[in-house]
Image 1 (cartoon, helix red, strand yellow):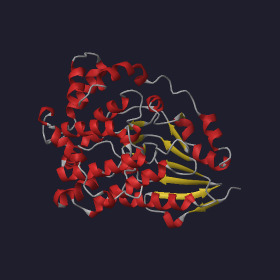
Image 2: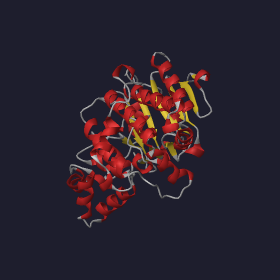
Image 3: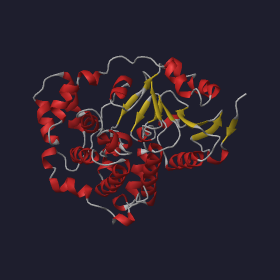
Image 4: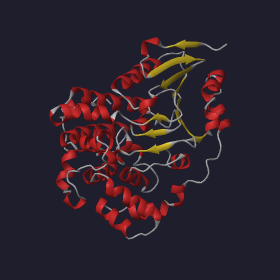
Length: 366
């Protein structure tokens, strides 16, 4: 019989934790919101993972969901809108706490000292990617045919955060720029090709995987998952790699869109159509962010992103994006500025101006 312990101290309404046979199971349970992260959820995850780091009863961590529809769809963007609208320039202690604590959680997960398995079934986007992308020394990221992977922040007037400037900027060729600027979704094979996932396990096998892991314990954890893995098939982005590199290696967002406009192929036109709907300003900020992120470590990327998110709420672009997509659902955001040709270098540079002196940065301890 395996050891089974409920970790009552860290349980919350939407995050359940338990220890069984040497494995700490973290299960997200907010299915109606596709497990979108609230501040309480971030704190529950942080508290539990911090405790388990030094707990000899926990030799590995498995992150999963009660729903096959999503591991985590991202941060709670309705919360961002409601709190941001209620305070001048988005100046809210709750917003500040959310992003500071979420990014600190992402950093801890990346450097977690024990094996960290993320069951990336269903939707895994934005903040969901942040809690799934542990560092290479510990991670095992499992996807299924239901997996929908994306960093879609430019669609709501934000930018790829939660460490996205680190893992997107390290994707093959110009694929990170492609994902960050279009916000388009990829499946299992592409996620593995992009080094955003490690193994493909068919969904019919995934359902019983947590129970099987509990029985196997930590000694057989990786071998068990590998034994259930299958070939996800060819990665569409591998076939499109030359096209992506040709267009998205251009030196600016206007140059990328101009290049795509000269290509009648469906792949290029789909990317162009997506970019025409995104925030012009935040595409330009994202382009510069990924360029800088390529030369930074995880901590540096998260500190840079923390600065940018503060500037974004000062500007208000994300509030308008969430309004159009989630609140009013008119899908007609009034971006500021409204067109790409109105975005100036000074507007982009403003996002990278430090909000705090270095000694006062919210993530200075990373």
